[in-house]
Image: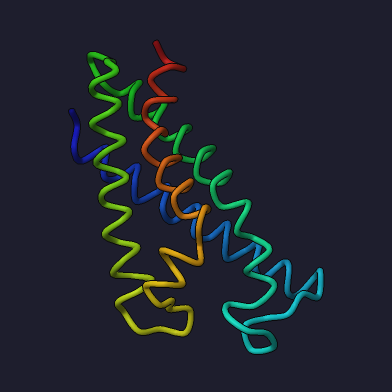
Length: 141
């Protein structure tokens, strides 16, 4: 296991999917004229319409990065992929809790909004992140 490489790829993936989601939200509001969080309840229509796409972003990006990670290992094994996926998923769950629920900012969500109202999307996202290295393993083997 190359922990440094694993964490760097996780950071890259997390930033990419976050910016894709933000970009899609801005596109929905500015180009498609959907309501923003100032104009509608919750996070706004522009954001709400992005939710079904979130698992897709994650499965594509984290599978590609999982492939990069697995190719960099001397021995590509299913157990290495499962461990990598578990590490990625656990770190993302903790970072999301801190960054999207506990720290106060304009896009902050309550625990209920993030872990209950955001279903099934948040669960599918964490499954996609976990499966990223496994799919990467299946591609490179």
